[in-house]
Length: 334
Image (cartoon, rainbow, N blue to C red; front, side, top):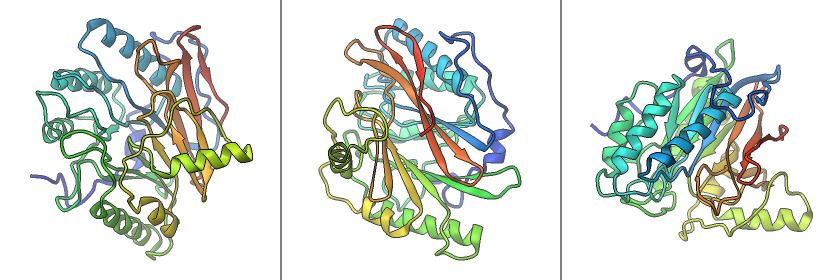
């Protein structure tokens, strides 16, 4: 079966909170460094991406130590792995070992496909999707059969009273086998339907949209213009562009649809390993995650913490470790 339910899975935050919060783990390099959860923060998401697992025991050791550090410092309620988990032929082994590590935290998590995940010889995209659906804490769902890709989902975040305050969208930006891929019309139609359905369920009116954020691997084509404009106007919110943006070349209508619907306020991606900037353009925040690739040419590695506030607003914080100093730095909320 392609679907794991009647339609996309809607994960209520209250379910995630029942699993508890992990403390600072023993592997943390600076045990006194934690993300201090402010009083108005209802829900914390930790975003990871671009682990690019290599079939070497030493690589697993370094990666898992960093994962322990990040989970320990962020104490997340939900973890989103935004793709390029591996690029090796033995992608089945890489996914199994990564998932075993994630499941050991006993925290709900999910995954978005990227351009390298199914380029290996052993597992296809469908094989990976089937495996992820079989896990206990992984909330990944293949999604509707008439929508391109796997893992087009939304997750509703609730406050302590059960009120939906934010929706998390994940969307597949990988090719049928591998490579990048534009967001197809079937995905945009699904996103449009979902925004209206959530608004109807929560507010009784399809036009009274619930605020949302979106996670994918590939940046939208608007990232370049957004950064260029912010750089010119000296309005860069955080971070730097260290390499050019590489969206899929096809001109899709995702950005235009986001602006039209007025629900999604932020888009988070990986893909470019050296970029970690955040800028706002056209009312949308465009952010790069800190990469998790453990190779010498990457100046730092880390993750992104997204804080959902009690009023539904969203802030974020970067956790990054310098390759040179090996010390972690946690940014202020922005």
